[in-house]
Image (cartoon, rainbow, N blue to C red; front, side, top):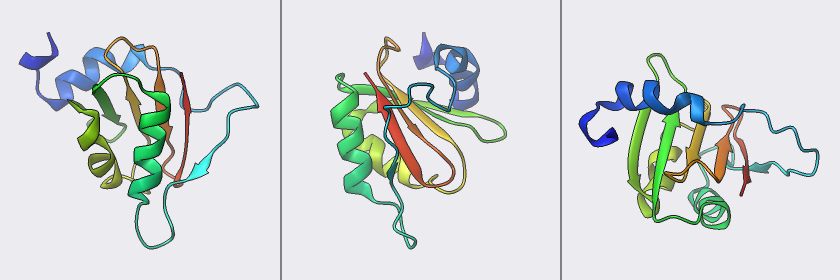
Length: 112
């Protein structure tokens, strides 16, 4: 279904499957994913590994227009790094059961 769509179409198709950007649970911890010079790829990768169990992920970039991509989880940290400090970013497994949220302010958290 998503294979036939462009990045804007993917975004429009799945954006409502993602939870709100700000987690409601107070026990969720935000971690820095930017060191002031560049995105911290290891930290982003570790968050994806910890929270998302699938080998494929959906990444949404809340830009104008919105961008949605489906990719192997192993490629997602590099992709996400290009948008850190520019846009809010959300990543999920294809079943929308586990998530990583990266704020435009350079911090991230997850939920599984």
